[in-house]
Image (cartoon, rainbow, N blue to C red; front, side, top):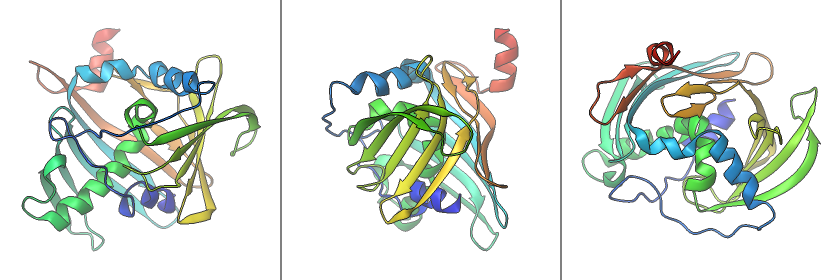
Length: 250
């Protein structure tokens, strides 16, 4: 699991952000036969609703046999503003506040380090959206395959990065249900560690404001990643707990 977290953050390349939004602007070519798959997955998780979110707060938690991680984030997608709170490798409190398109302003080394962690942590909850956001991804359908964490089978879409937020050659294999395009599991292979593959099962998605997100990922053994303490902010409103918001919707 820690190798997977590193693949998403500690050694990942930072994307070139759009100064207006903090997002990336890149180019893509995809095979026509597979492009509907990645769009269908993104739409299943309500990618179109993400623009309604003005702000998102959450905590990423990860546990394994010998280590635990807890990182707190506040993200304003429209402006690229990010606030972080967590602990450094020595257990001391570490905080940062920056704009993704202004990483070189102020403590550049700290901002860039934290932003790599941000890329890592948001990847878990936004990867279905990245399928249409990140124009440096290439897609290949691998057909119906055994799940990396048995038992069972599912359709598999292989996603390969050519740069941008993820290092060139990073490979993400998404195992999804062709009936509803929900991701059941994924397996990730880092270009720098081609023999190391880590797989996680995805939980059923939850309503996070206008979008769907999987919030719990179970690896082999004791390895687990989960998202907690989620708050959303819509334009003109205060921060709302996702749990309380779900009760209101019911």
